[in-house]
Image 1 (cartoon, one colour):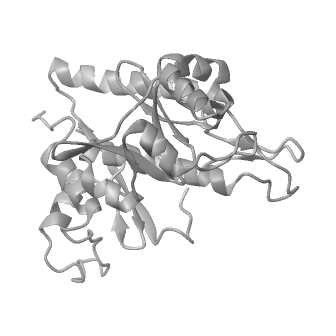
Image 2 (tube, rainbow, N blue to C red):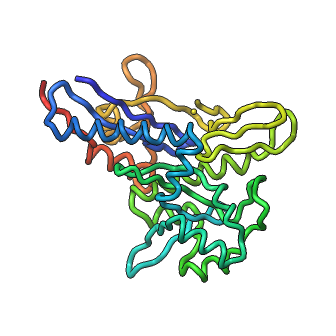
Image 3 (cartoon, rainbow, N blue to C red):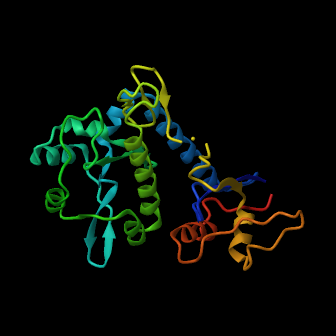
Length: 278
């Protein structure tokens, strides 16, 4: 049996599950199709990250999620909160109505996509990329126009389902990284991102900056790969400080009230591709 483990970085006590799945030697046809779809989508997103022209084309039919100073836009519908998305035409119309240059779209970053190859982008209307000439939009006027509210990030996570919360986490992390790397650490000159936002380049020093692909010891306490069975055992473990037979301490999960705990539990209870007997 081949197992694709889950990677769980620990953000100073906050554990998050990024991807997981299980593949077996003998699987039903639907499982093969599921894995094939995932691989196809991954290749498509990789192409968009490397090909500016392909990414610009994807924007034409893609969906955009809006932020303001790293706070996502939410809309309330009856008793639930929704994460609205906008087409390129709708976004450009909004920017024009608010007196903004449609060039602001160039500040958007690629955050994912659907199985039908609809690319998803995030754009922060409160942050200014060095390539943008327009002033930052004021929060109240945008909220009034879109009939929504830019919600503090942690509060937004509690109000959305697991899928949308995960997408928000990716978007905010990438937007934050770009905002912190607008200038080259060597030359001090402005850096320029590619269309997808998968890297930034300094025209002066020629240095290429990428979002942090490895563990940043100043940000993370630890990061490692864990199998499905190990995560299941961690969920059942009552005392995380009990030594194992090899003398080491097992990894532990955040408390039950934490979002990270619920995300991990969701994966354990609803695996992408369940194991089957060989």
